Figure (spheres, rainbow, N blue to C red):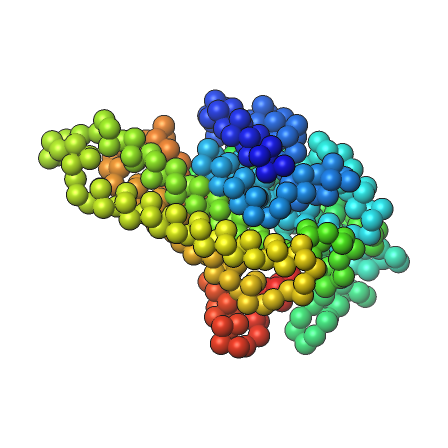
Length: 385
């Protein structure tokens, strides 16, 4: 299955490049790319085979994300974003999971911003709100949206100053899309706003990460949020590798108009290529090793080990930093060539800066990893979920 998924990703790469400008212009993935994603099932990589998913091991997902990001960050971002609602599907009951994930052509999107409300209504909820940055919302059949639970007009509290949160699966046709995604980086992700107005959602189509998993498979047991962080790190490595390889290609032809020296004759360029290529290799090896350990725990049904989860967080954010540093260094070394939109360094540079805004790579995750190293408990409620 790993070979099949990677082969599909590699075969998709020339299609991605062929329709690159169309993706940029329309601010969403070009239709031939979307159709290939549907046909190959790459957006269903963590869905069980019984529901026509790939059920791809998490370590193999890293290779998939990195390969796609190397070709086009927006494509990798959409595939990666599809994984989150699919992983959260483990908290649904089996019939509802079968309903939400039954069609192998369906794609998904989500928002973890608690900017909506779910008012208790009998055995369900009335969902209302607006969510921003919903990547792939135009392509999705179902969107998973985070809400604050309300009862009798007030937030229902689970602890002092902590309201109850619940996710709701909302189907195409039950939400509106507001065209807000006018940006530079990750332009092809179509990360618009989504609006839901007073929609009745059954309790079965909602979930909480505090619920027990109803899926007794490795994907039903592996920690979700650090796994997503690892996938982010793999994408950053893919962008970093593309930047290094692009600069290597430039050394074959580029001559500095100021000094008359070929790019390959400049010591700082040679040093930067070697240093960042080695850093990418090291970060990749560490990330894969830590994710391999976490996957082994999930496949063996062993209890979750907090130090293993923390190691994945550390590896993921280290990979993120390493990829970003490589992109920045190669972009600088490329000189004025890096400014032009037909140069992969230009695309990698703005895509990387857009990626860095995601919540999964913010410093507080590393702060919690540090707490665990000191024998303390992490503070974020989703750290080990």
